Image 1 (cartoon, helix red, strand yellow):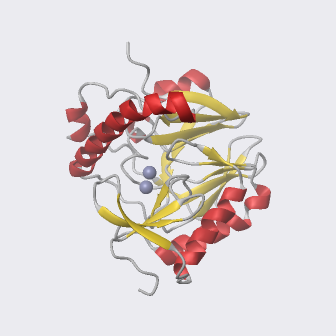
Image 2 (tube, protein in one colour; image 1 turned 90 degrees about the vertical axis):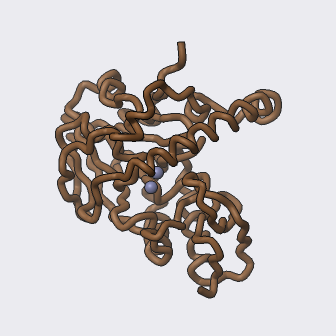
Length: 294
Ligand SMILES: [Zn+2]
Ligand SMILES: [Zn+2]
């Protein structure tokens, strides 16, 4: 029998990682009275039963942004909130392209797994990709139903879960609607796609490098209040707060035209050519041919 699609584990009191390993992480955070599911994943497997297995409180969804890998299970919930610049409706071509990427990741993992067991020991249940379930043609087209119309969230809004509050931070850059949530008391920052430990995606037409730099600088300034950064992608779902400063420094070097930034050609998960700016702890994907003086 194949392992379940989701891997779930607690990372802090009443905070759970719901990983679709090597693809995307959703996060569940519960207060005394209610809980928030931060993103709903790809929609390849139902997420609600996974949520209900660990938390009996009423659950509402907050989307960090409306990309295909963050909203797939929205229809399983009756209340969804997002930044109002969020767009609904995803072209099946995006899911078809991502399915190709998932197959590529699985092939790569088959080769890498043996090397990892022998030499590196980095793969874990959080990151080792699961076999793809059957029936993904219907996941591609028509795809998961879109779910309820999102209720608008604004920068500074506070969500009260009972003994726990989440403050909304509008952090455009990756997309106009990107937001983060800060669990003020526990110091957990849910960073969406604004901070990731693999390549950070700033290459798409809707990305805004200047806004990205401002947003990551804002998060870096919050680092003293943060104990844990909870992110959406790649093998390490959590980072220590110092990482916020590293990411902000990387974006600062890009927007100030630091000529020592190393750029190399790469490909994103849609298979499109990009320029990858390589930093010590992360990298940033930029449009192909990007140069600091543009
Ligand atoms: Zn995204
Ligand atoms: Zn994403």
